[in-house]
Length: 182
Image 1 (tube, rainbow, N blue to C red):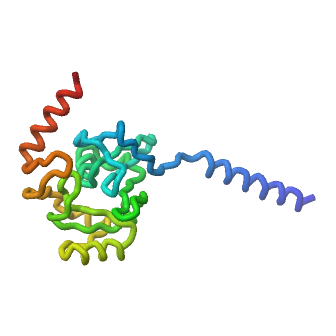
Image 2: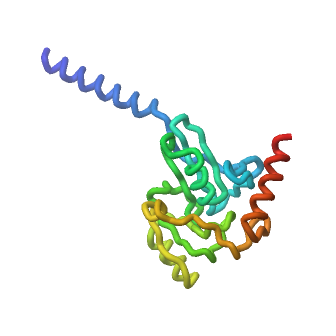
Image 3: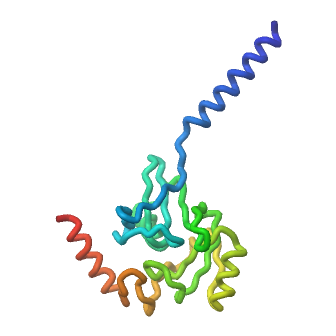
């Protein structure tokens, strides 16, 4: 009789564990829809490419960005307390990678949508290979990004608009945001 209660307890415990694990929120990346997705900071189109990033809040809200630098700007503006997960794309395979598990190659000359010069990779070897192929750059981890300067390359062309300086970028976005309110 006693072993029947033990078996019943074990079965119900397993059922409870399964119910809890199945009912939880999934904080996974979502697909990019180039026709409608705009960066939540600069309002530019988010391309389904190796530069796309996204973060997910506790409420399950997904914020998409066209450049990892824009994702960083969002975190500065809104804070990080509500963020559950952050994702970047592997530059080569375009696979989503948890941002804290990725490796990064940085150099001001590296082209990225908003000229932050930071490229993400699924593993250290891929990032090192990219740096070697480019002949410049430094390898960075997620923890290194906390002390990164996040400066945009002043001499670099903005990949989507050909913008050459911060003032032109800010003026463009002021006009773009004004047009979106009407």
